[in-house]
Image (cartoon, rainbow, N blue to C red; front, top):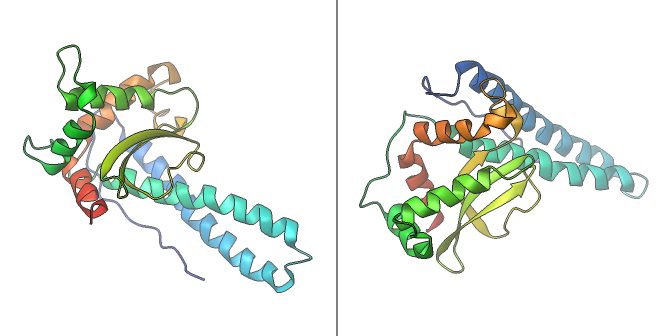
Length: 206
């Protein structure tokens, strides 16, 4: 069975997100990689008597989605902070797609892009733990955003992840109390390398 490898990330000093927060967060990511591999090993072991181990196998499969998505979501998250903050170009394909797909968000004097960004940040402040996600749907050729509970409940099937913002408390508690998580959201976007997000978008459209 495939063995997942822990990725390494080169994240510079960030504004509003401490080095300690990133270090501890990366350790948690490593745990997801380790557990995804351990579950796969146990599945192979228990498959030798699938009838006897039916309950255990069912629970392992259920748990795998949690560990796998925790691993994969964090890889998108950490990569988006590599290379230092870079703005999204005014002529970028991703900006154009956002402005087309979220044209109705151009209200109160805001552009469609700014309206979408405000809406995405509002999604990130959903009560509870989870992820704010921007996806590309190859079936419709459009972008959509959504809230994912924890990291595996509510993922949109068949859509490619473009941008993921971790809103579990472990992502910001070294720097902010829960009541101030809005400051963490602002810090994330202040440090975001939009060229990475643009690359995710281009890959998703292929």
